[in-house]
Image 1 (tube, helix red, strand yellow):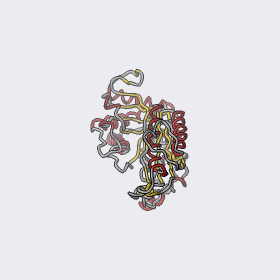
Image 2: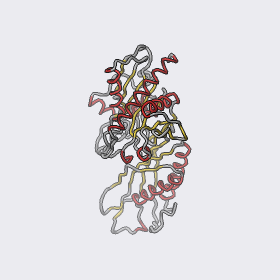
Image 3: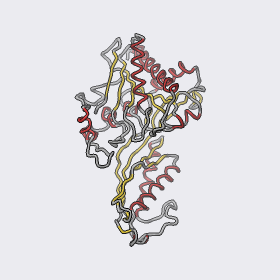
Image 4: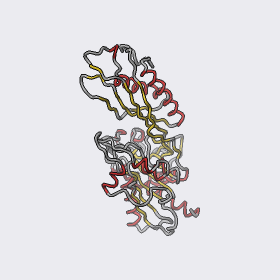
Length: 385
């Protein structure tokens, strides 16, 4: 799968390493910090250990996970998912590129082309981990707004990805009245608006990031639309509820019925559209390991000073958080103790060229990452693994 691993030996080397890492791939308009900070800080961690002749009880490793974003090959966290045994290798290898639209490459063909397919099986058995720590920018505005230096991540919220296909009928824009159109794009637009309203009711999120239509002519009413739907919430039950309500609403809208007053002001049509749902990706809510959460918290105290936990706040410097975005740590947590470290990013902007975390914030994160890894290594030594 192209995952990269680097291991620094410890005093005892017949046991799995404690890993730190993230991913280097980004979005089409991505910045320089999402994922990349976690890998470069982990490499810096190894350099600090070497430069200071630090001996650890067990090996310490760095990992770069391939295609976490799922931007060009649309399957999120795919290589860590294969490592965990949650995503079949054949399905991952067969994932087709969507950027640009006429690209015929698959993930396997591109890994072969660049020489990164590798010969070691992508599995938790071939490359076991004792623990996984991931430093990441928050990708949201909370830490910056509250002037907190570190987010101690307790878990990741649930999400599902879908592809919705709307079929109507191509027709002439000048010769076909509103009453006789099966307008796939207008219907899809109503569905996307409905998903927003339904998600808001449940305090969840629903988003569409990919939309394509055919035939793509100025004077033709489109008869085919395909769009993505991303539903997220902290609890699996909420995602399931939003999904169910969206399916009901979309079916009604395709049939020309009114839902949530979305048809207000629109001319009714005698023709209907059809809808097809495909589930592309499911990531249940994830809860990280208490040992790793405690190691991150104590490393934060070492750097920032003491602070008691009150609700979700840790003194004046930290905050216990649930990640809104998916991360490779979701899959590592299935096989080893895992946690994450968040640092603030300017205005909460991510997946954007303006993405930025200050050098001071990056250094804070790197120091907490190092401290958490060393604390976990010490814990392993005290417990005999």
